Image 1: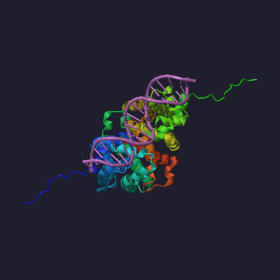
Image 2: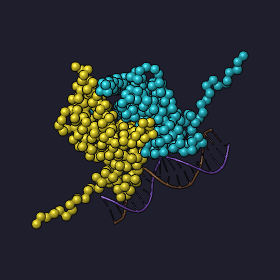
Image 3: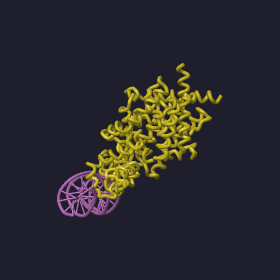
Image 4: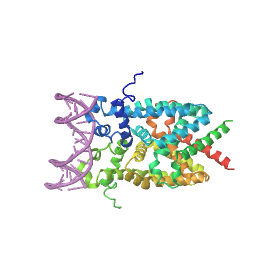
Length: 208
Length: 208
DNA sequence: GTCTATAAGGAGATAGAC
DNA sequence: GTCTATCTCCTTATAGAC
């Protein structure tokens, strides 16, 4: 007879639970908009207990953001990694990123908060540990798509074309020409892919 | 003999001075990151005096943001209004917007804060009074550039292509392929214009 | 219009019991 | 590891003198 561990699902460590439950708070309200008391209430601990796990609020915030990014990173890399022509991988990535931004509103907001953060230490930490890997993959794809263009700028444009549409999500509904189907990530992805496809095709023509 | 007014430069009203001096504070630190004490110190008043001019902190913030946007609105509309082919006006606008975002960092940050604001009342107020006019002009240009495309999505893409590059400004330096000249607004404008020019040219070819 | 003074509560962080 | 209690400082906002 095989002995089973008493708890099949091992109880998650408190530290991880704090990160998981505080991340959406920071995503929605930003660093200044969330107090240690808020976090404690969300986790079901007292404020003082948080200081057993994290040196201070800054560290908690930093770890929570990094935790959320690490969770998505794998998904984003998978979109880019598979086989297929560069053009096909681009379409897969654009569609995947659009779906992620549409589904995972908290993640989108977290990105926005990080970009706005004026604390240089936090900025560079998150840039290096969290954005860099994702960007490298798109950067490499960009140089495959058109070796004659500046891959850095092209990669940023690809990110921008997708992300900006969702950043303006709440505002867009008040703008002329808005129709609900534009909020559909597939519709947006098609728009972005078409725009890029045409541009890249024309660039290829010019290079010849 | 011509009588001159005693004060050539009329003393600006305090209310306007508060808006002008508090706007950069909100731009850099956001709503939660600026206290009434901070504003008072910047203007050279006591905290209590602010409440003579504004009902509460919310109103001060809202008015300060609207004030800053009104100042730039004219400039942005001028870029679009003049004569020239749609293609020429697009290039003028992209170059002008890029220059503005590069020069006027506070304004860029203010845009980002507004997009992140989770207060729906503030969101819709600013969207309607402040973003809408700018968007309309670009929307109209977009439908001239290519009547067969969704002008709403194309307009958003034009904004996104320019603005996102500057949003990531602080982070970009840690990314691969970064070179300082990419921070130059003229270099970025050229990249964006080329990308769009090619895409539009190809679309024209396909339509025929 | 601007001041001083103050109310009333929220913030981050720590000490020490259990 | 988590608690209660508390320190100290900062927050928005108001009352009333000048």
